[in-house]
Every structure is written in C-alpha cells, then in structure tokens.
Length: 163
Image 1: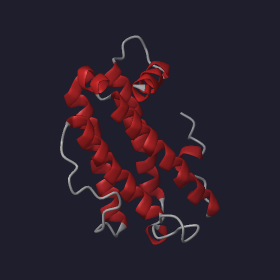
Image 2: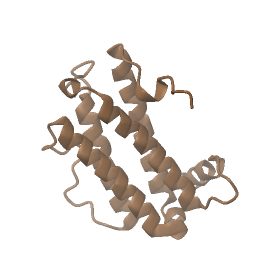
Image 3: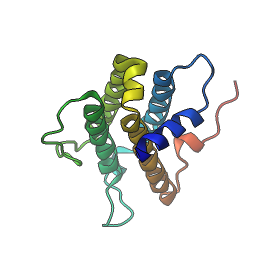
Image 4: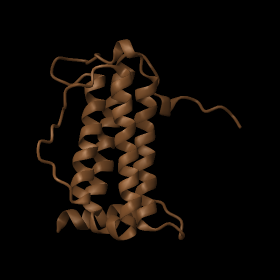
C-alpha cells in the first residue's frame, strides 16, 4: 500500500501537460532516463568498459548489463511474465557492442510494454514502472561518478550547441 501511495505521488509530481496521460508521462520518463544511459554507453570508450573505481563495485560495462537485466525483470513483473531463471548480472555480454545492444533493446522493450499496456497498464503497474525508472536513475548517477573519476564530463553535463 505504501509503495502505491509513493508511486502515485511520484506520478502526480511529474511535470506533465494537461494533455498527457499517465502512460505518456511514464513513457516520457522511461525513455528520458533510458536515453541518458544509452548516451553514456555509446560515449564511453570500449577499452574502459572494464573500469571500476575499486574491486568492491561493478565495472562500467557490468553496470550497464545490470541495468538492462533489471529492466527485463521489471518489465516481466509489470506485464505478468515469469522471471524464472532471472539473472541480476547475466554473463555473455563482454564487448561494448554486445552491452550497448542489450541495453538499447531493454529500453525499447520497456517502451513497447508501456505503450501496449496503455494507461490502464501504466496505472495498474505503477509501482513497477516507477521502480524501473528510479533504479535506472540511481545507476545513471553511479555512472556519472565513473566519468568524473576519469576526468571526463558526462554527455548530459556537456554544453549544448546553440540552435
């Protein structure tokens, strides 16, 4: 019950025009944070995908794989699919190309699931969608520290070209 109230407050607090439905608001947030993480995945050098600031944390590449895998856990939960055999940190994604493709597919599949469920699905599974968005946002912040520790400005913090 408490999670539903927090999720509803989150949805209400999101900036939205009067024309946006709950599903559209969630899709905008899902795609927004997904785009930010994908931009980092595309931008980060392949030879630094194994970087980690200490042995106690995931590598840059492992964080991206974890985000993608977690997206599928949440997508499955929200759409009533089984998570049997779910792996939080699946193996087999070793190269930048493999990792970026997996991440992009997970974001696209989440957007498709949100669209397919419509507003009824968005509201019914609000805690799952909000949880997914929050989880990715937490790891986005995590990846920002990897950039900063390497003296690199993250894509989202770079000056934008003037239009």
